[in-house]
Image (tube, rainbow, N blue to C red):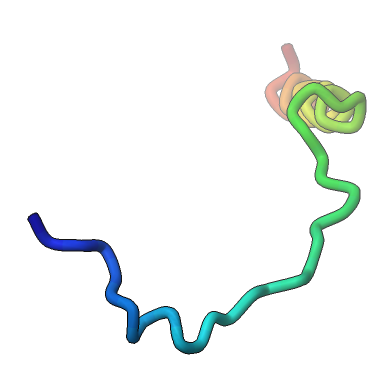
Length: 48
C-alpha cells in the first residue's frame, strides 16, 4: 500500500490562516429575498 505522503513532505508545511467571515448559508433571509425578487421579476417579464 502506498502512503499519501512521506517524511520529507513534512519538512515544510504551508498553512493558510485566513478565515472566511460572514458566509451566507442557503437558510439566510437574504437568500430567500433574492429568490423572491428574482421570481417577481420573472413573473413581471412574462406577464404571469
